[in-house]
Image (cartoon, rainbow, N blue to C red; front, side, top):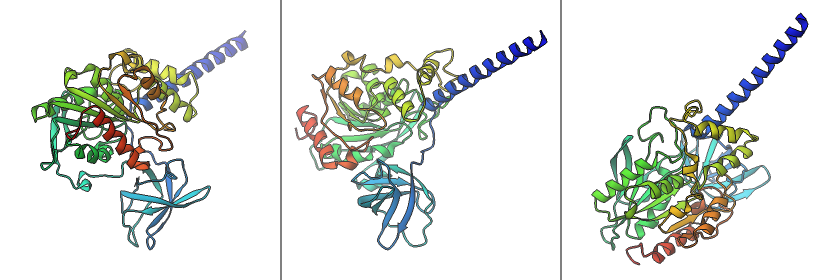
Length: 389
């Protein structure tokens, strides 16, 4: 009898341990979704030739891309710019350095490949100023690039919104094209991005609350001379732009959306990313269930319940009522383009989606600057949005 009791007790403890372990794993997956994290390293610096000004990196689908990019490093340089691919084999790729690295510089091995390219507004050689935008989360820093004083001015301001795990520098690539169209650029920050104020829990809401900071930026633009605004969102910034477009009290002044590698539906994105990281079903679904419930959202690291239904812009496509330009590479590799194509199919009356491939996630400007710029300028002219249209 005693042996039976011991066996039952052992079985119960084993079951409890398994359930507890599974529960902790679900919570860990949930927290990964909403917790801002440091930039992840995704390549290694294998060699630097300061005479030839070249750099060798481990070969990945990103590091082998043609075009101009950036590389976050540690040591003497925190960020360097990269140019053309000079050679490659199965394990490494050699690229031209566009940032001068002198002999004796210390460059650590771990690095993060980036599409940002520009790291400071000074690099654009355009007039700009630092401004603060008062929002429900507190004062949010922004960069304002006024329209060129010697060019026909548009009454439209562009409000640019960076993506998850990034900051305003991600958006700098797009400033020149809109500046050439006569538009002022307001490049904004939002809660919990490391520059704007931190909320109580410091977690992302995946666009469900961040849009309020963008709405405050619209108010700022209207107070300072804008008549209409164009929202441009990068990756998660695209989700924020879409939420602003359907939720803002300023909807009537939103002239259009430009979405670069956008998140249209978080559920499909998170399932894809889970598969890529080897996280099997049903953990992603359980993690989203945890995050969407007011009872358990805090356990998953969220400040409040994440309304995944409200964030699904395929389901809400009928609510969109402004012209939308989607720039998305078919082989994005991080945010699948499927939902973008589905939105274009659902709303062909307002969505324009030129074909891009190879460019990966949020690197279309880097890979094909000419095609990317042409897509924006032609779309703006077709919608009568530019000063010269």
